[in-house]
Image 1 (spheres, rainbow over the protein chains, first blue to last red):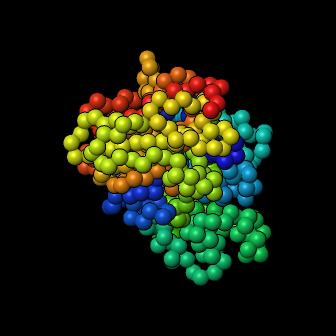
Image 2 (cartoon, one colour):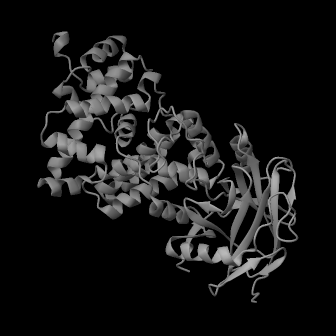
Length: 238
Length: 259
C-alpha cells in the first residue's frame, strides 16, 4: 500500500533493528560536543558525534543494527555523494547509484573494516572506485571491481591526532579563504562548501564548460592533497 | 639539481612511499608552500601507490566541508535494497491522519502507577512507570483498538502508544513462543503519553509473516549515564532483559482473519 514506507530487514534479520533517531535529543546515539567532526546533524544543532560514539555505532552496525546503519548513512551520505558529483560524466541517476552501491557494499563488508576510525576514509574510497568505474564505462568496470575487492582487504593508514578530520577541514577552509576572488574560488565554494550542486550544474550556472569546472576542482583537490601530505610528512606518519 | 629544484615525480614519490628520511624531511618542508609542479603531479596520482591513504583522506576532508542533510529517500531505497520489506512505517499525510484517528481509537491509558485491566502489564522498576497500548491499521484502512489477545490479520500494522512518567531509553521487541525475540528498534521515550515515533513518523509494526500468539514488548531504562549502554547491550544480545522495566501487549495473529 502506498501509504506505507517499507522498511526492510535482512532475511536472517532476527536481530535486525529498525529505527533510531526520532528527532528527540539524545536518542540513538548520545551526540554530544566536543566532537572531532565539529558539527551536528541538520536540524539537531549541537548534536555531534565523538569518535568513541562513532565507533560504537559502527560496531552495532556490524552486528546488523539498522538504526546504526541509518545513522551512518545520514552522517556520511553527503561525503559519498560529493565524491560521485565530482565526476562530471555522471548524471544524477548514476550519482545516486554510486551512493547506494557504496553503502550496500560498505555495510555488507563492515566486519572487515579493521578500525572503525577509518570508516569515513574507507567509505569514500569505495565511492571513488564506483564513480571511476561508472564514469569510464563498462570496459573498465571489471577491473575497477577487482581493485575495489583489493581495497577492501587493506587497512586504512592511521591518522595522527594533528590530522583528525576537524583539523583537516579547518585547513581546507583556510585554503579556500586564501584563494583570490574569482571563478576558481566560486567553483570551489559552490561545490564543497555549499555542497548542493554537481560539477555539471555548476558549469551551467557559471556558463562554463564541464571540463573547465572539473579542472578547477581537480586543481583545488591537488592543492588540498599537497597540504595534507606536507602535514602527514611533518607528523612522521609511517 | 639543487635541493630547491626537487619536485614530486615518480622517483621521489616512491622514496616517500618507502619513507626515505631524506625525502620525507625535504618534502615535509617543500610541500608546505605552494608548488604548481608538485600539485600537478599530485593531481595525477589517484591510482599510484598511496601508502599514506592520501586520496581517501582528501575525499573525506572535502566531503566534510558541506552541511549535513537528511536523506530520507536515499535511506529508504537503501533499506529496501538491504533486505525484504517486513516492518512498516507510516509517513506523510497518511500518518498525520492516522495519528489523529489513533487518539480516538485508543483506550485511554490508566493513570501512571495503576494496573490497567487490559492491554498492558507492568513489571520491575521502581521509579519509572510505563504503559503501552496500541491500535491496528487493517487492510481496508480502518483502525481497530488493540486490547490484550486481540485477534488481528497478518496484514495489519500495529501502532504503539506509550505513557512514561519520565524520559527513558527504550527498545521495542516482538516475542513469539519458542523463538528468540525480534528486536524492532530503539527509541527515546518522553515523559507523558505519546505515539511511538521515528524521525517524526509513527512507528508501525507489520505483522506480515507472523502467525499465532505474539507479544509486543516495550523495554525501558530511565535516562541515566548508563541507560543507553544498557539498551544497546540488550539490542546487541537480542534479548529482553529481565531486570529492565517492561510493558507488554499480547496479540493473536490470525492470517486471513477479518472482523
